Length: 337
Length: 251
Image 1 (spheres, rainbow over the protein chains, first blue to last red):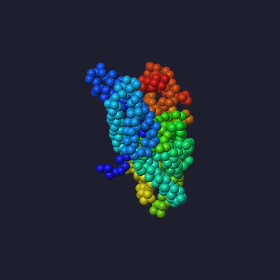
Image 2 (cartoon, rainbow over the protein chains, first blue to last red):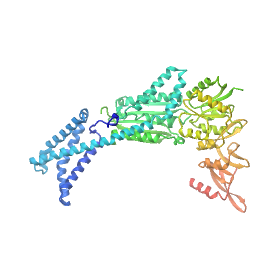
Image 3 (tube, rainbow over the protein chains, first blue to last red):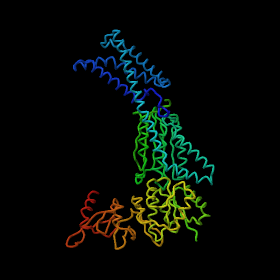
Image 4 (spheres, rainbow over the protein chains, first blue to last red):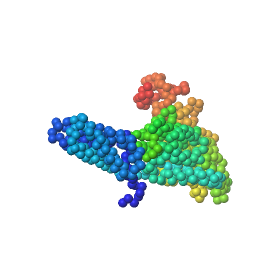
């Protein structure tokens, strides 16, 4: 029963510009071809010949299809799943048909039976790959819900909530206006945390979430918390997984600022280079406070969600350099789904 | 009855001012005066010595509220301690087990009043309880001097020597007496000090070398040389293999 809407992702075509998706298509189709060659060989000696024969007609078609899909992927994304699927089939069959005359040049028979055979196997292979991606989507769907639940637990520490409420209480008698602002920030923050966090959002929205969070922390930490933003305005409309930065900023405060008496600096850097987006976050490193918990859960969670959204094209790395803890995230720069 | 003297120790300014407001609300039920306020444990110890009750946050930089409370216990008449925490599951469980009083943030005036009344009635912390709650090594040793708590950073200590009832704690500048057992100190700071003799622990980081000392009991023994100290400390034959392997591993 699909009574909880959020647990079900709408069907969608894979992102044909994604390196992981492209390599999956290439691998899957070639694996099918090998299986087919194996089935058609009566003895082991015939296998190599069959593979060459199939590869001769398959590889050109496959490569052209991948390139065409890459080129038209933005158009495909605008279509509904069924229409998109039809379009993909149309592309595959057109390319197969268009390349058929060249096959005779490299020793193909050129008969109409071979033509029909090529179209049929192309359609079957496309169906198989589409089926694979469909199942993969399904398989990840509960994983995303799971990740979201985990995320809920990992981020917004109770510690932060109670301390913030306490700070707001301290303002109510003296500075009711500021208390109002703080409660509004808190409400907004929790609205985002509790939202359905599976669709990508604009980086600008994620950054404003981080600012609301930091406003609240500033309230209770005062001068001890310093933040240096180095933003790239051309990256504002980039699409990123929701809550990709906020939990990391929260970690930076918890592990980098709270353990120190002296003021500490958090640096947030956003940079766009062509079609890549770089996020970097650094904070003071306190080796003595590494027993404080919660860092690895948030990191693992964000890494997992980056992978779900961008496959191999996104990465998250951490290091300790010059007494500072650094997190770097790289992902594709996208402005549309 | 004199008004009770209260001190607030919390690293967050809004949290301190909130406690002041709540204390103000309790004033008609329980006369008191806030005699001091501090943003960390080290400053807190200076003002806390003249208090009857200290409200201390557990989660503070440099010195936790628990370590702060441990240092207070060297005083002849330590003030009562009420712990305050936003969310610290382990500490809260430990407090429950040991029947220590604590408040959770945000604090309610009614709860604060109850805790203050209980504190005034004089339940004192039992020795050992705080150590069991937070077994992490302290950053300071504490010594009571003329009714005040003097802190000695653990990293300043060259060696510790057991003498009769006390342990002598030697820094570059002077000696202090602490009322603790050498075994307990060795256990708490096993990464910082190494035992060189039945009655002596030396700081690993200040060891500069070893030399063959005078003959004792017909056999030449070894002594350890510490940086900035003329005195040479004998290494007992029993401890020598362990100390030697430590020295070798450092080279």
